[in-house]
Image 1 (cartoon, helix red, strand yellow):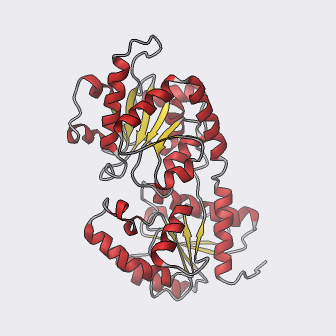
Image 2 (image 1 turned 90 degrees about the vertical axis):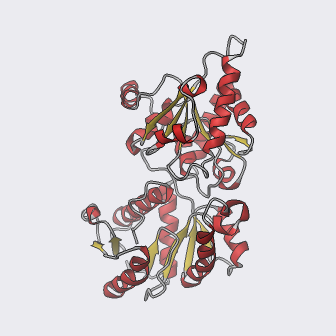
Image 3 (image 1 turned 90 degrees about the horizontal axis):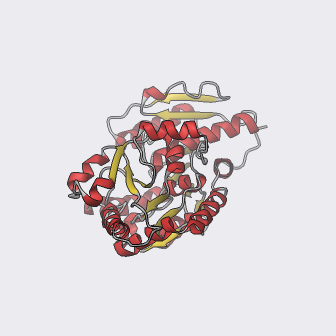
Length: 385
């Protein structure tokens, strides 16, 4: 079920990559052991996997997500006589005539400190419907151990109902050192020589803690600008990437002078350019309030970018020893961490090296292998060679 294929956030990244990696694993390593049927909502995706063994691509019509999930998809499953249905996002068709596996990307709605980032009716709906999805599913994939533990605690699930399978940044994420590539990307987005990077999205700024990022940057900027230390230099600029992020300037009352003059909004950054942007950045700042599997953290680690992130939820689990952790509610602590990392060359080098090492724990090869094994287990581990 690939209705999340067009999403730009982490779920979209996961959906696009997991289908490609499963087909790659099937095509290259198992010589077409299984047949795959890909259900799209967007016909623009038809034909992109035509060169793979045993792949059928279909467009399934549905007036909205509920109709698509709960009516159109069960009919398609029956027509195609599926052995198992996999949805990379957290819903399950109740009338599907075959076993269903879904992936959950956080248990936010069941945790009081995280549910506040959603509307009251949304929380009530998810708390009512999610247990039914779990009951329908033969197995559930979770993108972090924290998510697995939270769902097990909230729903009192049977043992082994949920399996943690980490995913990874796209394969092209790596440290870029080619001067020509770096210069081209720098010019394309008009990036400064020295900058702190953060990525966010419209309507997700509360979860990404953008207000505290601005507060912390203002404090860091003032501390650096007024420092008498010869090593302080000019403050690094702050680059906020994401579609329509320039609108944050007015919404957060960012001034045109002072620290505000050093905040830049290049808007959407293309996926193919992100590795170079991470590689150019002196620091990746991500004190998010709410993450299950923070894909930007894995991208930054793969590019060797030093990281400051929150000491809460999935951020600590994924970053491991490859980040400086801060209280996301403490702007002064975030500002101090920024100043520390940017002024300590040894710490920066250590964070970069630890990030590159930590990134090797998250690979699509491992994710695809574990996901394929789970899907095979659900249909009885049939040997079809």
